[in-house]
Length: 297
Image (cartoon, rainbow, N blue to C red; front, top):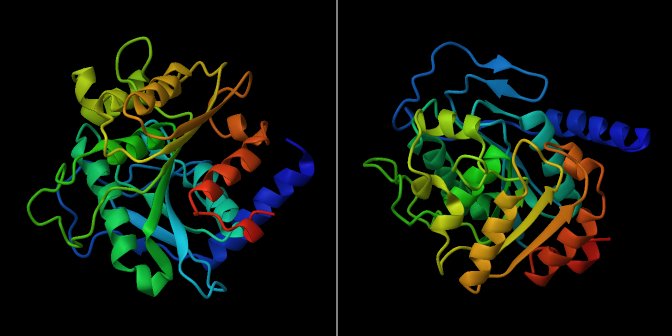
């Protein structure tokens, strides 16, 4: 990546971090516990040991009409949440295009798979419930997930309306189904040889049945359209994860599009070194009336 672009991303981190304020995702005590104790542990990319979920809004105050919104779900193998590399910079990208962003710092599962799914569902419902306050169109709320965050984004896209809604968690009654999903180098499959063993272990705490957590096997007629990015030389999460999800969408007659690059590896470098994804994603969002033409330039 060019030095100039690195500087732009760094400045964006500073500016956005200064004006955004984390809000608690759950009023009072969150449902279930993930068994993690002690303070969060900062990392160069984000945080480990996360047991308190938050949502950080990046709004579009200059818009007179309600705008589309995206809940951004960073990755980290379900062992950390990479908000600094796959959260705030993505909020900046969306904001430049007139789309509100909400960066989710979800509770890590620590073997309790329901916990991050609850957080993702709650985040979508919260944005819908406060759509008027945040000047958001409640019918245009998507998710954008990275790596294990891509698994969570696809999980919430393929979950039934009541899945992981334990008693007392349905605070906002709106739908938790996203209207579209964007998945970057996502963990999709959970089977040996294709899935990411670390994500599966952190999510389930054991060798859980692949069919329960492999989200390509969960795609149904109600799954929202998706746009995917992956690099063929990704040795951490093989590209077959994205192609399986894309084919599962096709079998259900659901719109899906993917950019598969020759090189890029796993993690932010996959999109930082393959800039052509930006215009392709813009066009896909424009076709769904998520991105207004004049803001895409």
